[in-house]
Every structure is written in C-alpha cells, then in structure tokens.
Image (cartoon, rainbow, N blue to C red; front, side, top):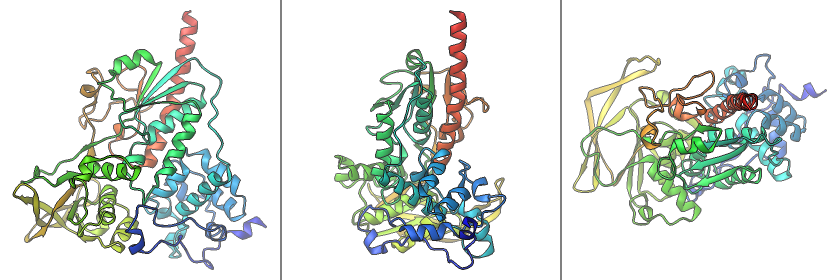
Length: 480
C-alpha cells in the first residue's frame, strides 16, 4: 500500500543534501549543496507523518500542499508532485532554495517536536522542481483569450513577476517596468549566488518573456514617465517596487569612507558575477578582498554580506548584533553556514562610533544586554555600561534593514497616499491605493519582508486586479 511508504521518521534519520566543505565553497559563489539523488529524496519525503492538521502548510505563506507532494515524491510520482507544488507557487524552485524553512514549514513540523528532526521540506522541493526543469515538465506560460486590456507592473521582483504571470494567464497584455537592467529584483541583485544561482532566476524570467510579457528595463518611473502617464497608458497599474532605502546608523563617523550600505555591496558583487563592469568594485570601494570587514545587523541580509565577504577574500569577517543568537531574526542555518566559513559573531554588541582619518579604521563597540520584552515579545536590547571594546575595520557594512522610498515624490504623483511608515496606503480587501486602478503589493505595503510573502502578495493582488478589470470592462461595455 502507498500509505506504508510514509511515517518512516523513526527508522530513517533526517538527512540534508551534503554540503561542500567550507574551504571549497568559500572559493566561489556556487550553491553550497547539490540536490538529492532520487533514492535520498524519496526516503526523506517518506519521513512525513501525513498530519491531519499539517502545520507545515499552515505556516507556509503560500499554504503549499506540502504533505501531498511529499507523499507523491515518496511514491515515485515526481511529475505529479511537481504539478502540485507548482499549483500554489510561481517559483517553487526558488522558494526551495531561499525560504527560511527553519522558521516556517520545517520549524513547525510535528516530527521536529518529537525530537526526530523535521522533514527536509525545502530540499525535497528543490529536488522536485529542479527535476521538473531537467525533464521538460515546466510548461510554457499560456496566455488566456485576449481581454483587450493592458496592465502595467512597476517592479520586477517576486511580487511583480508573480502578478504579471497570473494577469497574463487571464489574457491581459502585461508590461513590467524596472529600473535595473535585468529583471528579478532582489532575486537577481540582492541574494548571492551561493544561495540562489542566477541561471535559476533567469530561466523563470525567460519563460515570462516567451509567454508574451513585455519587460521595460532601465526604466525609472518619475524620470522616464510619471505615474500619471503610465495610468493613461494602461487600464490598471501595480506598484511592487520593494523597499530599498537603507536604514542608517546614527553614530559618529557614519559618513566615513568605507562605511557602506548592504545593498550597494551585494548589488556590486552580483553584477561582477554577471560579468558587468563595476567601477566601485574594481577600485576596491565595494570589494572586501584583504580587508577587516565588520557587518552590522542580524537579519538575512547581514548573513548574505558576511558570507559574500568571505568569498571575496576578506582578511577577517565579524558580525555585530545587539541581541543574542537566540533572538536574532536571521536564519539559524545561515548563521551555522557562516560560522563554518570562518565568520565570527559578536553577540550583544552595537557600534558606538566609527574611527576614521578619511577612511574607517576601527569600530568602537558598546556592549548590550537584554532587558524586558518589547511589544513583539522579544527582549529589548539596552546598553551594558560595564562592557566596551574596539574592533579593527577597513570596511563596515550596514545591514539594518530597509525603509520605503518616497514614492509620491519619486513618481511625480503627490496624490498617492502613504502611511506614517512611508508604505503605500491600500484598501486591504482590494489592495487598491488612493488612486483608482492603481494597486500595490509586496514590501511597499507591508514593509521589508520575505521573498515568499512577496510571491503570495503578487498572487493575491492579481486576483483583485482581475476582478477590477473585469468590472471595468463590463462598465465600459454598458456605457458604450
């Protein structure tokens, strides 16, 4: 019986795909682990307990049918497993690589609570979808019957690309505008190759292009066209620009040469990976080679920076975080990978100042301790007056998160309403902004978030846009 293949978590130990050695992987930007061989993937999928209430699916932002495609994988029905995986996600092979499974699906696996180790959901998802691409099971994007309506999507990141796909399937003409010279947003320029190799992203984008989605790259809304001009051109607009303005550190020396923003650093590194000319990298400004690097922050962006610095040949890499390991927001797996690669974490520490002549040469560090819990339930960091020290630094990377840009001013659209946090104000049932026919999704609504949330938001807003466009077309037909 097929059911006899499952519930093997007692007799089969949890096993992730083998990682390359830390020494080997620190020399390149390839992904650190290969995918499973078929017998291993089948065996790990068979560890699933097929819960009546699958907490893995409940805690997945996309509510993927995880137990079902694990069972199909265990039974050797891999194409069906892929089709089910693809039914709820436009980018399952990307989610399998970069979702923080230890905080979402795997972190809430019932087997994890029994002490047997969670099912390796992310690695199985990666195996399923990589196999689907290799075997030609990923079908071309098929547009629905033409509606005669046009949609503009501002931002070619996860939310924008997801909405573009769904809207194209509805039969709308879709145009995607992005300021970069390649689509993908943070998937392309923010996330390093050792977590997400770029050909994985490029083949998804190629599929969208082949499906008739038009990409306008190197296009700055506000400079090349105002938001109102795009509104005149399209029946509806989606703003999915993400949040890119780096949060600053208000300490002396913040403006010193060598104190840089995380995204500037990561974009330069990814561009070099594409073979682009990057003057600020070539002159050493954004290259960590031979330097003492200090990264400030404890999220996933900070982890990307420290591990990139290792691969660039930094002399030393330290990460300062004001809370302890248990209370950091970044993935614990990423911390473990970074430590294996030689990164030193300096917990309960925050920069007090940067010492520089012209260029930074030292970080003065204030010790921290954890006080009472804040509104989120996390214990708030506070200064520890008995602890301070200095760390040498030739490069300091600020990875404290991102805030929204001033889109009404940037887009030349003062009527576009924002919240007190700078995010776009929307009707959370319809996802429409203060401007009729202009919708918003992703980070620009919720603030900085995860790629998987962007995919979900893109899916959800496309449904609302399709309803609105249908009603608009019906109203125009009636008026005619």
